[in-house]
Length: 378
Image (cartoon, rainbow, N blue to C red; front, side):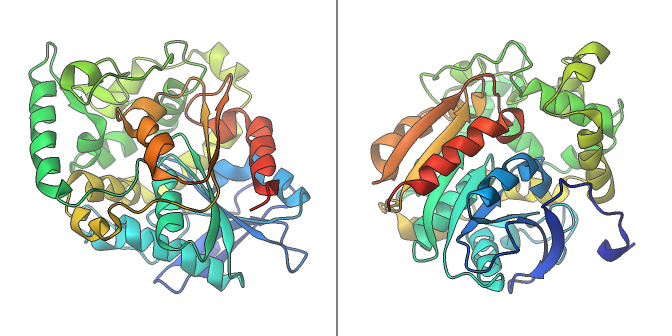
């Protein structure tokens, strides 16, 4: 079945979907709001894992109502965007961060804009940060959500990275009980099938995964860790540092919300979750998992070292849920972001009653903060 033959995704009135050739090998599936008035400034919204352009549905209309052309694509490897290589054995080069920047810049140009504000959540956050770092002429402001950006890797980081990671992974395996880090699990060949073919079913797996990382899971009470060590990382929830003998499907099954909790979940009702279920049932997760493989292997550190010591000099802000462990999952990143990575960090904002899925859990407050930031004189 071709993309054109798929059933339309249910969207709020005022948001449309279409395919756009981004000039970098992709036919990108994009959601748009504020498209009916030419000359509007562009805001590009970049999702993370395991999400879609659909995850921005609740903030797009408020941004459009304020006068912006709001664009949210399914990123490379996700949803209804086509043109990327599928499967674990596919080449990784196309999924590296600098090529994802080309995807974003190409899309902005294809839509007729010369500049844009870029907003990234979760794995979309480092993409947005690298957009602002490498193409400040295009991306004139940047808002990051959930994942702080500590700056580009230092010169000589590659050998240090490999040694430190080996020590860390060995340390996690030596704990009692043994543990493993989710990003290296996601980088293995089994992760896609573990989740796509989860014993509880794909829909229940996604429900458990989103619940586990949200403010609805009461144990999400994050704090800064002291060091990037096995003992410290073992304090993270199991969706980040897993039991060594469990899959991610088994990990989240242990925290599955009750039927009553599911019925009470207003930020992700069953009909909204069904959109994710249908898309991931069709595509699987491997396209998004390739992004993790690019990071965990260290292969692309050398090309990123070309920006070693550079700062992000466009206006920036950071937004996260108060219950989001993602801010602290890599000790030191949050502090480095504030101290050295940006020269115009206009604000760090914590949103109450929100976990990792901040723009879905508390869209009104995210919209307000984004509009305040976008209205700030540049």
